[in-house]
Image (cartoon, rainbow, N blue to C red; front, side):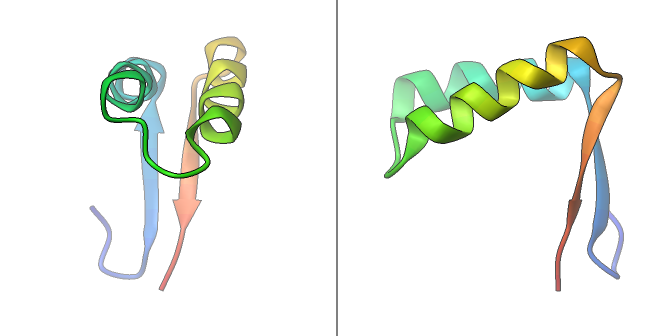
Length: 50
């Protein structure tokens, strides 16, 4: 985790997040699941935050 809010999540980490979202189903989770499925075609994704 980066203290400046730039965090990379690998394809494997994205799959883990995807599985967890399917069981916990937070608000608007279908949108996030669809987005995470796109990560399968990439090496991973970045989250840029505060």
